[in-house]
Image (cartoon, rainbow, N blue to C red; front, top):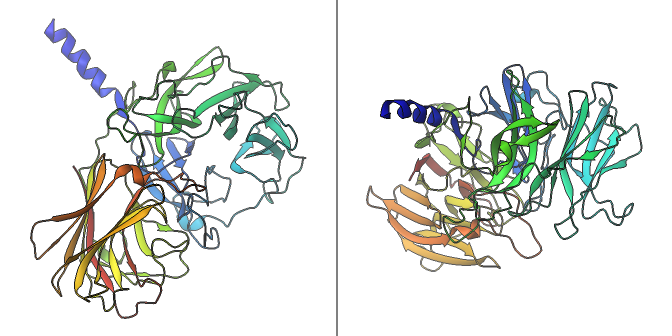
Length: 524
């Protein structure tokens, strides 16, 4: 009997995959397939370049091949507030290209007349018309419509000009207290039937869900799925995956169906924070059909380990490193907050290393400081870098950061002490409901390279440094819940980044380069 059950067990382990399929801050996924190739984009909000474009041939292993909005002429984010900017993109909406693998070939945006967010284009194969749906308030038309509804207009694809009056396509059926709002729409034409997929209930952990309706024509009548919602982990808020919703559907070459959608890992009940510091990530689930309706994951809750026939488990890489060799960044996964107004970094064409030239802005400004950031993609990881920096003023500062927003970010940097002018390591952490700053100073040798460390853990982040090849001195920490926080009156739809930066803190910093030899992350 043992020899009978063992092969069955191994078969189960093979036919599974791990969620999220694209970890770290990657919300609002939109997916398309061309032949055997899958392409997926996600939101970037205030970060530049905008709209990362991922490619896969198996739905599990995704490569970042570029960004759709990669020039200032396409995306000017100067002064954009935290969690403003670009969100809920749809393939083909903003721009077009003749070669999806060449990010320089993307056009400038085509602007449309209908306002709103979460735009989507539907190319009707029956009428050959192009429809635009967006999300915006409808109370001025229907007082019972709740916060947001789905609006529809036919457009001229070449110009973006509306060809028909904007009209309400869908109002959420949820109670006003749910809350009642519909967003993130996608329209499909499958087996001679039109389907409208929406995100409803708001993006919060317990309320976010996906709902679907269908109709025999674009004119309706639209019928709501009696089994709605088709995706909702909020029935049990102790699930380790929550906020599932904002889904998109795709079929595989062999006729199978899948859904991609955003979700969060708030670590509940793993720890007591209940915060998802990585932000909203991209998840995957199989889809089957019953009575003409899609059924996501057999109606079961979404988990991190998903037993699914035909898909595989892809282990997380244990180590990643960028030595900045060959005069370029190691990959396309580096970002800046907002659009840079001029270049602030240099790379050696021979040898290795990254040089940052600090500008007048720092990480608290609604501008673009001299910083390069990467999405934190693992809950437990060690970020480190080696810095060669000789500040001439206490305003001169360069170091490493774990960054969420202009309000909530933490830094460990080399500078001069404002009172003694000694060369020091300075830490600043932000915590509490008003993002209170806590600052410490630690004297180091007058010259020499300094290694800086940020240890990301489930409950907290530790900041440390070492000099002369010595041991790491851990000198500050901050609870992880403050890396998914916002001030009263603001909002947070993004996730945590790790990065390097330099700043003149109000004045230029000529002749004072910050030289980073490498950066790396290691799984803990």
